[in-house]
Image 1 (tube, rainbow, N blue to C red):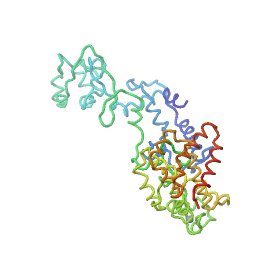
Image 2: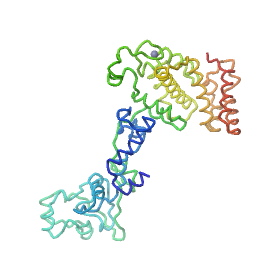
Image 3: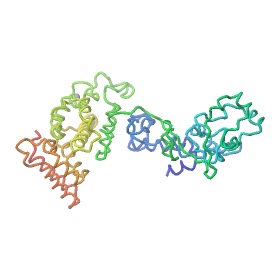
Length: 425
Ligand SMILES: [Zn+2]
């Protein structure tokens, strides 16, 4: 709905802020937004996934991209909203490029149609009118027999005019307005192209495909996104005003091992608790040799992150699930005094992984998984269990789930399968 209004009105800043706060409340506060709760700045949330953002569209910028009246003069008595829309022209005009046909619709002075434009910068309105023209003159007005008809006084004042290329006038074709992006490529106009030209930009990040992919679980991916941005409020990043004057920051201890203050690197997965979890679950993705260090895991997964292979998908789902459950466990211990041992957490991660694979992978994915030869080792089945190949069971459970339409059945079946066939201790 707000996109509709953004396309017909200049939305006041207060309303844009209210809408942003609704989204921020959903993201960070599980309800109404409270100042200081956001872990990532709004402008960074609005960057594309490939630049480390969440791909949200800044309503303020989108409103500008949708406002299209780029050729209308601003008069003194126009409304506030209309004036705001018209004020966007200076920013957008260099991208509005005319393809000259008969030259009758393109302003010779103010429109962009060659690299010397706008030509108004070379001459004053008085110099233009002294030569018998005016500021409303079109390209066709200055051409005679397909050649420029520049007055000699103009060429003395502005020799650059002599360098302006002569457009090929075609009397039976109208001028066409096109979009020219910042790389100089010209194409049909669209709101998407305006958005690309004026949106805020960030540095491209190389980990985004590892976080966001078609089979990812949004809440796991969101947490992994925060981890990759190092935006989680771990104990090493807390300031005194975060915890109050009665808490000594030096006494904070990791709730999983109680040995030191926790940090991103410590929790994932250098803490003795997390190391134990990772050492068990990594077998699911054939990552037995990948040490419990986040940087090493990222280095292993990143090169294959763009592929739709079983190895890549399983590895990415596993990393996100492991991080998610360890973070939940850390918070449960800190704030609810509820504890699970590493074995219980491993079971949860592995069952989640299996359920996710069954729910998200299509039958063709499963067939490929089965045929790839990756699965039997990916799932970490001990050598004597290889014969009971995981893919067969997966396919079976998959079909069971589809035919019965009960995830719960698959859940129980998965649990029994794990307990019966996997040495997870
Ligand atoms: Zn620890």
